[in-house]
Image 1 (tube, rainbow, N blue to C red):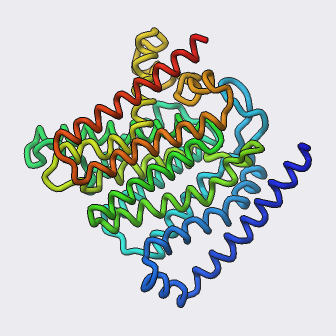
Image 2 (cartoon, rainbow, N blue to C red):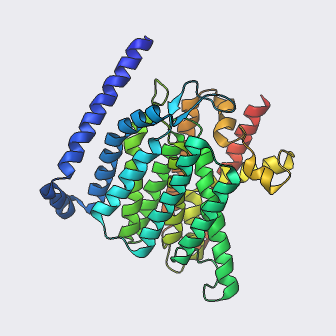
Image 3 (tube, one colour):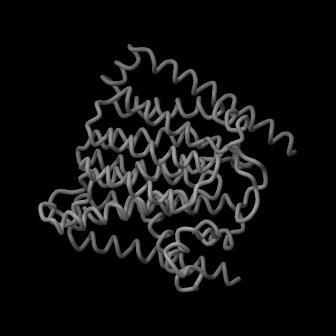
Length: 382
């Protein structure tokens, strides 16, 4: 039985890879590209280009990672049971950047976003290979976000033309991007979880972008979604464990790009509650997990200083807590997918909402979080 499942999965991956290769080669033909741009839309071409490129590259990354020893070894808090390659994120990074460079004109802020994400990914790659202290990684991430702010990607919560307003906006931007970058890294603890959550977040960022007539933002989000979906079949299976992981390079790159993209976007015209609530709802699962573990670790005395906080590694993230409830990793992954999608749909409905509707939608998200927290707590107690 086990042999048949292995054979089925290998056959599926071969068929999937060959199909992706054919699509990729077709998309390289100028006439096909022209037809897509004129008849179907640039967004669909970017989606398929990123999807097929990631799918074609992933097996090569698996082989390279295995050969040079960039692998994740079981043990400690890790829940997988076999040595697994860690270069999956590189397939996403290359396909994402290739899709953008080949299909759209990038402004200076787009270039800064891609460059910043690349620096964060390189640090993550070194960490996958040789391990880097958490403090060093955090310092580099903050430095990169400061450069991003200098390029014009900064939150607009306070009066931007005053010194105090600019400094507060900059501080909030650093907290938002660095926090979500690491939250995406933290949630990458089960097969397909971070990849699927990234694809869902990208989908809703793209939908809001097209709702608000921001095609460039939409194309960037679509490129990320396509890259994640092309990689997902190698990272998640209903019958067998993942054949390759994102690695820190992949999870931090995706988290950095998506969180920075949310700052770059315009969420609503003259409606502060929509501007504030839309990105919060789309990223709610990551925000909730980061907030929960931080508060719980401080209250329980697990961390007593900032250094303890950044160095602490535990099994108290949302996927670990839900595993105690469901007892099955795939159920946990699908539960978080549906939770993320539910809150994303709430964000979509905010576009033409009244002030009171926006407040009620955020309250609804909070109540959903309370329900999930009660569920998690009951599971842990049991």
